Image (cartoon, rainbow, N blue to C red; front, side, top):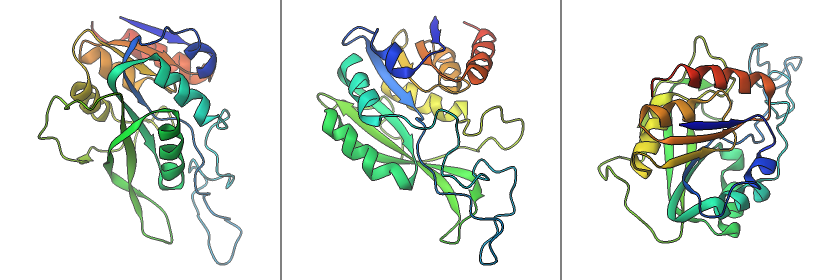
Length: 228
């Protein structure tokens, strides 16, 4: 069972009841390090198809969001003693943790997704992303307590339908560790629905929100194809 909304995340979150969600897993839009000035003699990115080729620190049309506002709403709708996974990069890691702590979340630990590809950089090739694993209320154990903090899952390199599309297997890891069958998983920035596919694969309910009509349509089509 799932519900999808093609709307602004805050507008939809405002309609959800208090303490109604069992888990949040999301990859919110955030600032990125630019792709570099390809006209510069000192540095040429040479990647016109890169998600950073515009060199403006943005990936999406709807890139500018108020992190405190959506995190505050996620805190409100989550049940007590539940968990949230927030994917981010080094540029936004500390600020997002600061804001999430301000609205009430407490840090469990920092997780690392190790990918099979690297983003170009003059300061070490970037082959991972970070996940803030936080909680509302009292701490509870994950379901598989032998899970390590570094997770190796291949990035999607071919046939990608979203610039920052995440592997379904990675989302399944977090959902299976922090929820039970029949519970409700929320992704307020679902993109093309990888979190939703993972939730349905694991017999969870799913609520997904996406403001971009193109990505929403792709997510809707993907979830229709999941056997339930």
